[in-house]
Every structure is written in C-alpha cells, then in structure tokens.
Length: 140
Image (tube, rainbow, N blue to C red):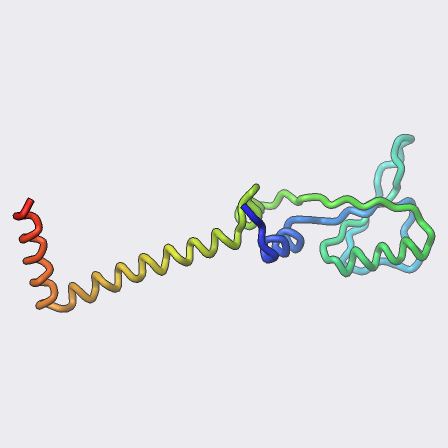
C-alpha cells in the first residue's frame, strides 16, 4: 500500500529515532531534548557517544554543532519498538487509509441504522414494507 504524507509524518514523529555517533560531545552544546549516552570503551568501537534525537530540528542542531567542531560522526535511523507501533505504523499498510475505510464503514452503518429507525417510527411505512415482503415471498 502506498504511504501518504500523513503516514510518513506519523512514523518520523513517533516511531523513528535518529542516532548520531561521535567521539566527543560538541563544544557548541546540544539541545536539551537530545539524549546523550556514553558507549563502552572497547578497542573495536569507533565512537564514544551516542546522541538520540526525536525532532528534525534537534538532529540539525547536533549536526551543525558537530560540523562546527570538525568532528567525524555517523547517523542512523532506528525504529523504536513501542506498544503503539503496530497501530500507527503497520508493516506495508497505511494508517491513513485504514482511518478512511473505518470512517466509510461507520457512515454506512449509521445510514443503515437511520433508515431502520425511520421505518420503525412510521407505522404506515412499516405496514407497507411488511406487505411487500409477504408479496415477494409468496411469488417464489
């Protein structure tokens, strides 16, 4: 299924997290919303710090600070496994179109229930409907 802009926005906002790896914390500073994790110091590890950002503005601020400090860095987009991920980001499906089809189904059910309520409220119409059904069943 084709993902809409709304689906992409939901995934970027609530599912995807940007991990930025660097050797040092930038001197220019980082935004308050960015989580800083110090990684284990092992011989095979290339980076010492991981910055986890949710918003695009925070990612841009960290990248600008790292570039100003002439630091080498790497970025990765990671999907967070939250309880609501299967609801708003089902694999291969569009949440927006799921909402649209649910809305159409609810409108259909509402229309049928309204028609039934109108028929039940009008005694003459109800009697004509019963006679029509009797005539239809007798003809078969």
